[in-house]
Length: 251
Ligand SMILES: Nc1ncnc2c1ncn2[C@@H]1O[C@H](C[S@+](CC[C@H]([NH3+])C(=O)[O-])CC(=O)[O-])[C@@H](O)[C@H]1O
Ligand SMILES: O=C(O)C(=O)Cc1ccccc1
Image (cartoon, rainbow, N blue to C red):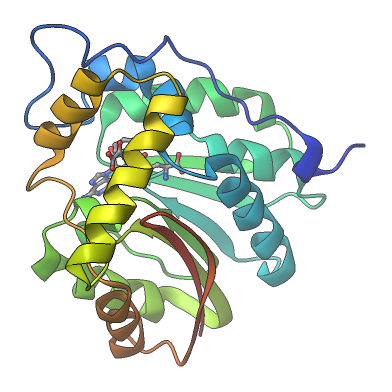
């Protein structure tokens, strides 16, 4: 069997042309229109998305403890759980949490091929109201950034409390540089990345406007401090490209 690094992600959606039209989702929400194009949107909008998902699989395999849960918070269409499920040899309990019903409908479809091997639980719930009890792995890729900043600490506290000793949080977020000149340059380079991925300038500008006050990035220092404040002693960064950074944190 080929390994998960050489395996394509299960991405299945219409092309993201949401912001080409005269009316676009503003403020940005993960509604049915977004879900219909999401796999194309995320794979063309998040730098190193495929590598981040594969890394999350690699770290999950390294820290997963049989008999505990693997939880993906903000699982969207189930892309991470689907890749993991194909390469996790032992049957496991794979939990996907998301507060968008249409996202979970797509995740159910995508994960249907793994129901004979793993116990799959898809829960439509906000992260703020979720429990993470008896988990050895919590993955939270590009989700916390959509929560009001004042609610993020409590979610990380609950993740820490729910993880078993030796449990791992794999967290990816869009951040902002604390240095305005770097932030401006990183944003320009990120937008050039989107252009190379086929987005037109007006799509880029409209998406940016739609995400204003919806996607609220912290600085890396603020994010790391939040992780330590929730109880994680061992925190490190693993991957960073433009403003997109992935962390691991160990209980
Ligand atoms: N408060 C909340 N509670 C639960 N879910 C939420 C909340 N707010 C947003 N969501 C959900 O979090 C996800 C954010 S996308 C994550 C990508 C995925 N992790 C991936 O690796 O493909 C962001 C992105 O792709 O940039 C969406 O599915 C929302 O419905
Ligand atoms: O930060 C941005 O400009 C993005 O486009 C990131 C993103 C990717 C997928 C869904 C929402 C936001």
